[in-house]
Length: 204
Image (cartoon, rainbow, N blue to C red; front, side):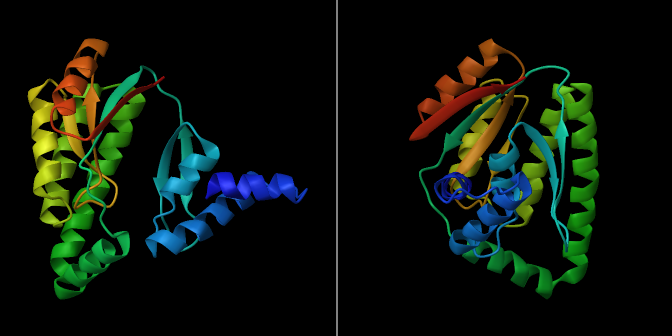
């Protein structure tokens, strides 16, 4: 949707700012996801590594500079889940037990703060442990599934310092953090045996 917004901007000889392109992308995301977080269109618009925070108003995002490369491996379960349905289920769980949900959000907030610090300091071991903990929280939230959990376990067994589901959940993708190129290749090979699609990349 961000690419489409850029294409319309050029074809119509408009002069949309990056913020306006991002806003148009967000509107497009609503058509598919219902209640999107805004992170996909923001990352696609501005690129690089971003710290993203959704708010009641405009989202907050800060571009980050890395002190060392971050090597990751993505793997797909091959399962497509409905974001609208998953978000609706989570909302129901929140409304059914506000205290439980508030406690989980508190844990998430602390984890995100520690994760940002680990990224800024280049502490991949710490970041990996936080990713593992994050996956546990997502399991508690009931948005993971057996296929995702199996890929997470396989990635860790192959040497990833951390692995978790990514995105909507109940299918979709998992992400693994690999500290070296050698381990990245080993994790990639292990996941290729289980997942229909696997990718690897490096942020520097």
